[in-house]
Amino acid sequence: MLTLSQDFFGGIPYAEAPVGSLRLAPPVLKPTPESVIFNATKFGKACLQGGLAAEEVSEDCLSINIFRPSNISYDSLLPVLFWTHGSGFAISSSAMFNASAIISQSMMRGTPILFVSINYRLGPLGWPQGALGFNGYNRTSAFGGDKNKVTIGGPSAGAIMSTTLFMHPYVTTLGRAGIFESGFPGTSPVFNATHRQSSWDIFVASVASCQNVTTDNVIDCLKSADTSEILQGVIDSTAEAQAFGPALDGPEGFFPDLPSNMLANGPIVNLPFISGQNKDEGTHFVDPTVNYTTTLVGLVLQEQFSPPILPQTTINEMLELYPDILALGCPFGTGSETFGLSPGYKEAAALATDIDFSSQRRFWTQTAANASVNTYGYYFNQETSSTAPELGVTHGDQVPYTFGTLASVNETDPAAIFLSEVMINYFVSFVNSLDPNDGLGLSRPQWPSYLPDDQILMQFNGTNLTTIPDDFRGEPIAYITSQMSAFHQ
Image (cartoon, rainbow, N blue to C red; front, side, top):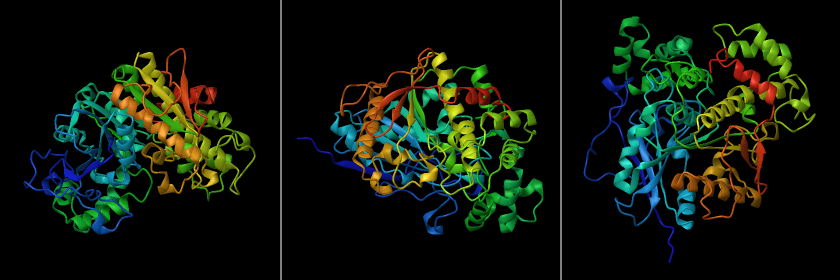
C-alpha cells in the first residue's frame, strides 16, 4: 500500500553564525551540530531584511531545510532538488517554499526525491563579498540523498546565482543538472563594485555606532556593531530596488567579467538544464503610477544602465524597436487595452521584459545548445486569477505552479491545477533522469530538447501544452543581444 507520509527537517545550520569576525566574510561551514538533539520541526529564521518583524529575522540564519519521503534510510541515495530562493537579493527566505506537493508527486509516480532549500545573507551583508553557501548540499547524504545526483535550481535571484555557477567548472562538484526559472547571469546588470557605493554609504550611515568612523575602520566597526543596528542599516540601504546584487569581483571571483563575455570566452559547463521565463516578466518592475512618455522611458534606460553612459544611439534604436504602440506593449497580446494606466506603461514593461529576461533566456539557452548541452526551454503563459490584469503573466507567477501551492494565491481553476501537476511531473522526471520525458506519472506531451537548428519552447498554458518556436520579437531581442555589454550583461 502506497503511503505519502513525509518528513520535514527545518532550520539546520550549514554554517557558523555570521556575526562578529564572521560578519561580511564568506560562510564558514559548520562541521557538527552544537548538541546531540536539535529541534528541526520548523524553518529557521530569515536573514536580516525589511518587511518582517524583528523576531522573525536573525543573523544566525544560514540554514537548510529538507523535505523527504518517510521511512527512508541514509543510504537510500535519492536524487536531490537543491532550491535557492529569489526576490532581488534583498528579501524572502526558504520558508516561502513548501515542497510537500513536490515530494507527494514524486512518490506517487514512483520516483521519490529529496528537496533541499537554503537561506543566504541578503543586501549589504550578502553581496559585497558574495557570501552564498552552496556547500550545504553535502548535508543531504545524512538524510537519504545522493550528493552525486543534485539538481541546482531556483527562481529569479536564485536562478541568477545558479546559472552563474554553471559558468564555473567547479559547479560539477556541486550538482549534475539545473532548473532555472526567470533568472539568468545577465538578468541583473553587473556593474563594478563602486556602482553601488551610495547604497553601501547609506548602510554604514544607518548603523548608529559607525556613523563617524574613518573609512579605514568601517569594516572593523561593522563587525563589532550590535545586530539591531545592522538590521536598521539593512532596512535603510535596501529601500531602493536592486540596491545590492552581483558585481564584477576580479579574476578569481563569481563575476570576473560581464556574463556575456564569460560565455564568449569560456563555454558553459556541460550539465543539462531546464530554463524558462514568464510572458510578461517586466510588469513586475515597472511603476504603474508613473505617466510614461517615450522621452521618460529613454531617460529611465539611461539611468538604469549607466555609467558609463548608455549611448544615445542605443537608446534611440531601442525606442524605435519598442515604440509606444499599445498593441505591441506588455502585457503582450492585450491589444489597445491600457488598464487605466499611462499608455507608455506597456512600452516600459515590454522593454523590461526583453532586456532583463527574454534576451537573456534566449542567449543563455542558445549558447548552451550551440555547445551541445542538453537543455529544455519553457514559456510560462498561464494567467493567475489573483494577479492584477495589468500585470499579465508577471515575474514570479510560476512559483505556486512549481510547488503545487495554488491555494496560497486562491487559484481554483481546474486548468491551473492540471498545469501545476504537469509541471511538477516534468521537473521531478528531470531531477531523477535528467530528462523531463521519463514516461512515468501524469500523461503529458513530449518536451523536445532545445537545439541549434530547432529552437523550441514548451508553452505552459493550462491544458494547452504545446511547443512554440523561440522566435518571438526576433529583431528587437537580437538587437538587445548585440548590445549586452552596454546593458552590463
